[in-house]
Image 1 (tube, rainbow, N blue to C red):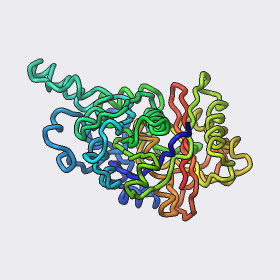
Image 2: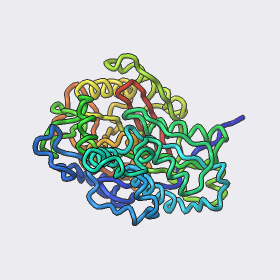
Image 3: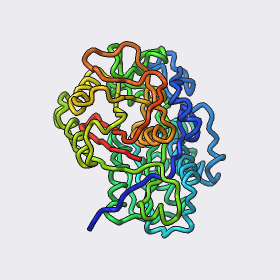
Length: 402
């Protein structure tokens, strides 16, 4: 039985760089950084000084009030991004078979804000003052769960916790659920809200978070002075459909998922399996590296990981050394569960506008000789390769096409 083609018909974005795809894309394509000094709490004596914060967000603008008190900020973002994506896709889920619609989300660490507030309530006010929804609100599956509850979705669904590749994992298997005929529609995405003292302390202990205090120099993927990633918050949600379903309802199609591949590494210092992941994704798309117009790299900003990824990209694109490479998350922070889907959205918007997503970089590393997009550029995009790589060794690559 042939697999169903998967197309993307809706984009919903809640991001430090902007709310909604238009504001977000204007800032990303023109190189406007949303990395700022932390304002959510006093970081004077804190090891991390900067983050990608969402400055203005009112949950009640997007979410029924009965859900707000029951959920954490990361679920607020997910519910808001889902609503924007469904509006963008002009998709009325009440007209769909709820058993043929699924939700596939990535989230790495759950609800930091409600967890931190719960500790305060417990130790300062007593157990009776802790939010009764605490236990379900912090859990990493809460975003997927509340989206299914709000929209009455009953189809094949799942949440993934996989470090930086959490969102990539949800996207990969959500695509599979359409290809194999389990779903007609998938709400795919991810959400994170780690900008709290407790959350950022835990992330800092991974050794991957930059301690730089200058927002302009904190997140510099593939730069010789790189010192790690900067955390961001927000959510991106994509509406995926089988091509038949999208055409049947006359939907606008942004692009299609041409192929996807996942591999695992046992040695984080080797890029062999990451290289194999990219090569397989391109081969499965029945393309050559010369057919790829832009690579959206993981670019986590550590010395070792960027060197490994840079070498893998250079090897795969040996016959296309001038392929454009960008790390748009350098402008808004690493979103973990929402990272990969945000960059898939960037690839779709690049195809639509013929503007490339930009990135921060000041002094390119001589060990990472690639054609980075550091200034606004116009260029037609027919195919993009989107990468994701977890600290634990999961690699993912997707080819997105027109």
